[in-house]
Amino acid sequence: MTKSSPTLILKYCVFLISVSIAGCSEKSAEEPRPPLKAESHSPAPLAEATPEPVVVSEKTRETYQWYCAQCHGIQGKGDGINAKFLTVPPRNHTKASYLETRTDEQFFEAIKLGGLSVGRAPCMPAWGNTLSDSTIHELVRYIRELCQCEAL
Amino acid sequence: MKIFIYLLIGVWLLCSPMLSHASLIQEKNCSECHRLSKDGNEKSGPDLFYAGNKFQASWLKQYLQNPVIIRSAGGTGDPDFLKGIEANIQKHPVLSKKDAGQITQELMAITLLDLPEEVDRLELLTKGQKAKIKYQFERTFSCISCHQSLNLTGKVRGGISGPSLVNAGNRLQARWVASWLNSPNMFSDKSRMPIYKMEDETRLQLTQFIMSLKNENKR
Image 1 (cartoon, each protein chain N blue to C red):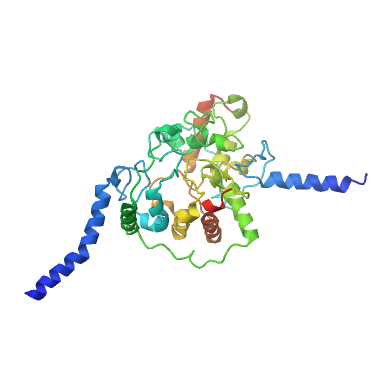
Image 2: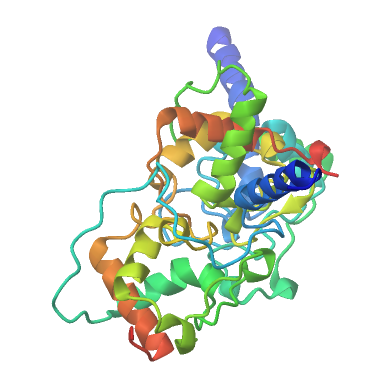
């Protein structure tokens, strides 16, 4: 080992720490991240996945417009009014190539517990205290409609 | 008879300022853009039926004379809210010093309820607590995705769908911030903000953090 190794290791540690504490609006946050545990504010535990087919109601489409479109955009293209202010861009819900690699359970968890719960960006808040499980299931189905894709 | 006349004059003198205040809000037609009671649909401007709980009088008086944009995407009741059309965002009318003073007095008298005093005697946050709560503001609760605030170097960062918090410490009352975080439904039937169920200690520290955001700390 060379003389400069401890310095290099120290620099590497500092880099790792600085990346890990950066927020949504700082330029050092990158995707993808390894999965992390949900933080301590997590709402109630996840419900069992519903076995019956889920139908997307008009009310749920309005819910998407009311809450989700702020970041994900009116048509779900990831271009909501907050999008350009976030370092990690909001997910484009019409992009099948990525969304088909995710399961419905992962979507459900991301909406209910927030982005960090599935190892994604902390910009996505937890909606589990705002939306019911059944509405979240419908939102998952609506995202599947937007991407016209299913989990592979 | 004389006593009765004096009494009448006394009552008139006492009541006339109140009557003129009420008429100024009506005269300026504030209800066209603001709800003055919880009834009816949300309007393009923020609700004012709890203005006396929410705002600091000194800020209100200044704002009414020199309005600034707080919601740069417009009000959530604005039809173009999600389209981000800046040209459609209405700036608040400018009032004279006298009118601003009178309307401020009037608005500060409009309260919904007595808010808990829990934040009144809190100790200042330590450096460590500040760093932790800032982290939670940004990452745990994702506030920064929708609200502009100041980062550690005093630069403005954050989304625009929610009101800017850059000057929250001068604009808002701490009791109101703590109450809103605890129970937004008390003030709004349906805001676009997630509902959080956080520990009281965290909620009060978050309130203190928000109240520390001031224009004078902007760089």
